[in-house]
Amino acid sequence: MRLGRGIKGEPAVAARGPSVPLRALMALFLAVFLAMGGAGTLTTVLSLRLDAEAVGAVTLGAVMAAYFFGLTLGSLSAHWAIRRVGHIRAFAAFLSLFSAAALGHALTTDTLAWGGLRAVEGYCMAGVLICVESWLNQKATALNRGKILAFYMVCLYGGYGAGQFLLRLDHGGGAVFAASSILLSVALIPVALTRQSPPELPTVASMGLRRLYEGSPLGAAGALVSGVVSGALYTLGPVYALRLGYDSAHAGLFMGATILGGMVLQWPLGWLSDHFDRRRVLVGVFGGLALVGVWLAVAPPDLLPWLLAGAVLYGGMVFVVYPLSVAQTNDRLEATEMVAASGALVLLYSVGATIGPLAASVAVKMMGGAGLMAFTALASAALVAFGLWAMRRRPPVPADLQGPFVAMPRTTPVVGVLASDESEDDHTARPMK
Image 1 (tube, rainbow, N blue to C red):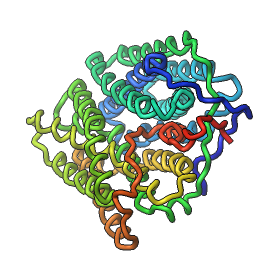
Image 2: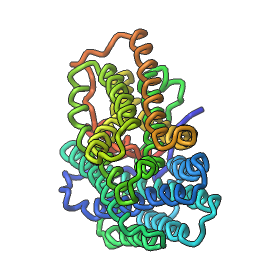
Image 3: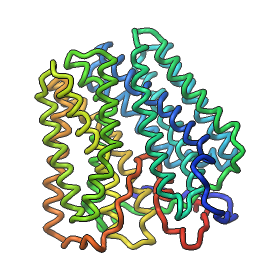
């Protein structure tokens, strides 16, 4: 099996110009912030509504996992629409369909219909992010690549976190779905009115799973388990807070705290991985995640500060394990293989994120809300055991020979090109093959 299928683009090669200031990309960043705000609101409220309807934890997990299934399919095939009609039209089409699907949830409570809508929403989000990331990649140079990627992450996570505050509109009606749809629709405006020239789709090479695993067993396993625990968090995190006796607004606050932790803790943990054996740092983070999972599984339900502190640590560790896995994999591969490996890792993460909600929902069915945290602790402990085994088989890469940690989101294979500096020497952007 191969992940990260190649994506074809136009044969022309666009020359890189001078460094583009961030203000020239504000239309794209604003669109991402608004779109993620709408998507974040929708994800959380759907989990809460399904739980309120008592559909059962496994059904809830299956419905919400459909989003990640659609995201995976979109990462592999949404480029066809972009090549056919161009970035701006494709961006508008994907967001318009996403906005319509968000409103569709207000028209029916049928779980099968909601699962179909979630799959469509995941596919559309992949298309939106491919458009944005290929656009940002065209503007990235050696001088501004790090700033662009960092600001992009702030908009991704910041928008998702800010969207949680709209849960105060959730009083059982359709207002919160309308608010989500409005944000998704308004996100069209900055890109529709931009004067920026549309980019070409960048190269996303392919790498087989066998080569990926042979290169870095721990990196591949880390990306997969990262998807498992992240998908479970996005799907069942609000349900966990609800089962503790909190309302939907507090459930949104819990999710917002996990996003805050994801934004704040990536850089200090990344710094540690640059100065010490990265494998030990990655295994240590998974070990810490297992302990935090146990902490939150037994957290007193009446201590909100305790809960939120645990959420910050929980989110910080969940969101850092993927870029650590990417960095660990890159340390073991040739420089020419890094982009292909990154694309495969993103899709491996997506597969894990599809599995995670389904598996975690079984634990929630057996143990209640605490089952999510018990599942996280178990999955993380399994990775710790695997990591200790993998470290015995190979010597570490010396810290001075390790590549730098790059804080990066888990979106589409194109983000691997954006985060890579392999083409900076010749300053050319290659079309997708």
